[in-house]
Image (cartoon, rainbow, N blue to C red):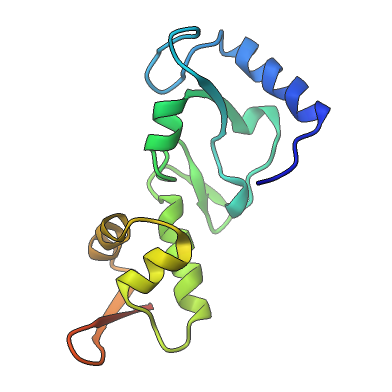
Length: 143
């Protein structure tokens, strides 16, 4: 967990106030829900703490989106698009670093996600190549 400083708290207050203490995803308001300040483009894929990249989200929406933004842009080769989930990028990066490929379970464990979430991404995306591994396992590689 990153260490927060007083500048972050001031920025957080600015964002909450700008968004009128209302979740920008579902419209629920404080004090009925716990509010977070969320990054539109996650810091892990190059997002910043700039005000234009921050949005108010209730805890349920922020946690529930599971790193797949709800219509919020993510990064794709430096161009902002609306359809590339961040988890897909994390999986691709993991597979690129694994020369021997990886099973869905290995990917899920390494990234800290549920196996079903990773399996959904692996099955939908044409960016992954499936190969029969040892026994009954399926190995995935980036294309």
